[in-house]
Length: 279
Length: 166
Image (cartoon, rainbow over all chains, first blue to last red; front, side, top):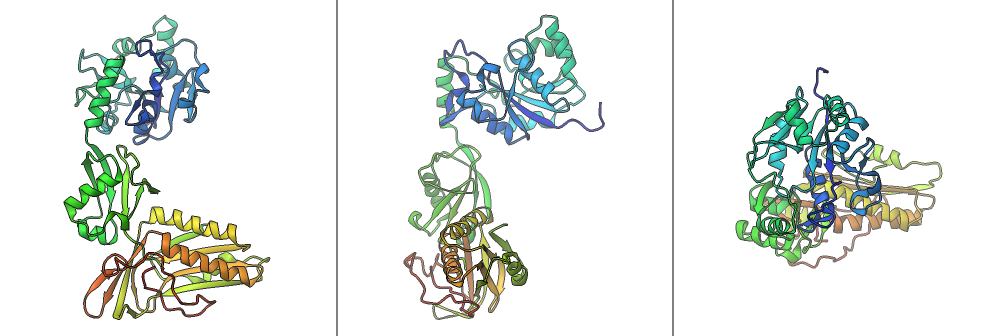
């Protein structure tokens, strides 16, 4: 063991064949975004160097190919092959391993997991709110797990949950019992879409110039049910009494000019731009 | 080369000018925008400039890149100041070097005009009366957005800082 814990990289698992869903899980959309992209962006907000785990026959798939990939390099199928391939590709890194089909997984849940990481264990994992067993696919896998995983697979093992039960992992109880619910059937997918669409989302707003003075703050994070910058501005006019009308403004999302009707996503940073006066 | 940048202290025009020098340039044109003591009949005592810098450097960079595509010039650069400025202080500097003067004047004029229209920078004027206001946002909210100024943006000419609505 080195003195400092290894850096944590991200690995999104999206290799499953989705027999119950009868379509490619990675491409299922929530709030207009393939869940592979949502998981990738979620992980990217917490760790650097995020990769998508793919089988050799998936490297040209358009949902996956636009992201950095780690192609399975070890024999066998399933999540263990993906995790072992990542550990082999970057042997000094620990891996935040996420299944892509956890639509309820939140920034708070990942933050909690990363803060409670125990680098001296083979892995740090949440326990299932349903059966108390470890959840291997929302977990941090340490470099020290590589050898034990190889032995486990050589002995015919293929279930990462059983591996964690047998070898011991630092286990955490999830604070949000729904955070790790995964979506396996069309019915569960419909439910998740309905739930997520109703959920207020968190946005970051920055205010400049006259609007900063009228809002009495230069930035804030707020929950909104507005789905576009236009709807958001209406909400904020009601709250702060901004005197500028929308047609005097431009809007930027994530530091680039945007349409007023663009669909906003969780975590977007929005800036309303009053008439400019440089020079 | 960064084509557009901000500074919180006085603009160092000498070092900015040096960045434009190249043996193939036969000359250079610059524009300096200064804080003027009068705007819309009110006596101005000082200004505060504020920018959404992350987007402003992108948009400013795009403007200068556009100028380099449109006009056959060698180098171009714009530096904008933010923070509190007094009357006479330089708020913005644009410099362009080129083989011949004509396109340098054109590119310089293009850059300052586009910067005033497009880059998210705001200024608050403080008046002798004790009053203050965000230019284009308050008293002038109803003014047309794209009125051109009558000033001539000549080489090294001390053009008063145009504080009219753009």
